[in-house]
Length: 155
Image (cartoon, rainbow, N blue to C red; front, side):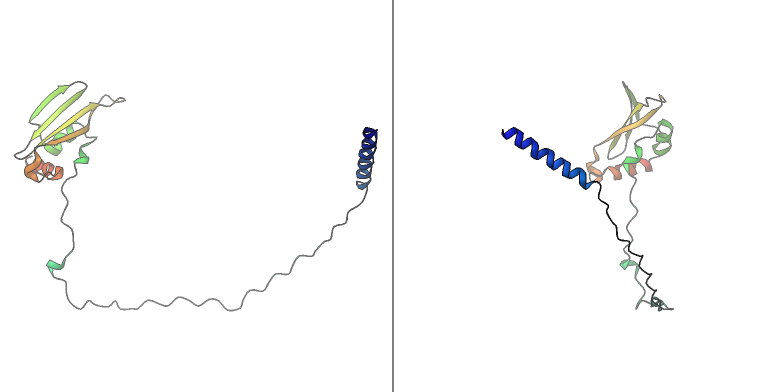
C-alpha cells in the first residue's frame, strides 16, 4: 500500500514539473552605461635632470682605487680543448701516456704538476680534455689557477 501511495506522489511531482516547462520567462534588458568623460588635465611631467654633474671634492689617489687585480687563468678553460688547442695554450707536455680509453698529458712546472685526461668524443672520435688534476701545488699556495699561470709562463 505504501508503495502505491509513494508511486502516486512521484507521478504527481513529475507531472507538475512538466507543466513548469510551458511557462514563459521574461528577461529585463538594461541599456549600456554611457562612457565616462576623460579627465581634462594630463599628468605632470617628471622633473628634468640637472644640466651639470657635481664634481668630486678631490681627485682619487691611485691607492684609493678599488679596481680588482687581474685574475689568473681559470683551469676550467682546459675542459673541452683538443690536443692542438692544449698545445697552443701550454706548449708541449712533459710526458704523454696512454691509459685506455684516455690519453694523458702531464705538464711539470717548478712548483706544481698538471695532468690532463683526454677522451674520444663519441660522435667525432676526436680527443678532447674531459678532466684535469693538479698535484704538488703547495708552493703556489695550493691554488690551481696560480699553478696554471706558472705553467703558461713556461711556454
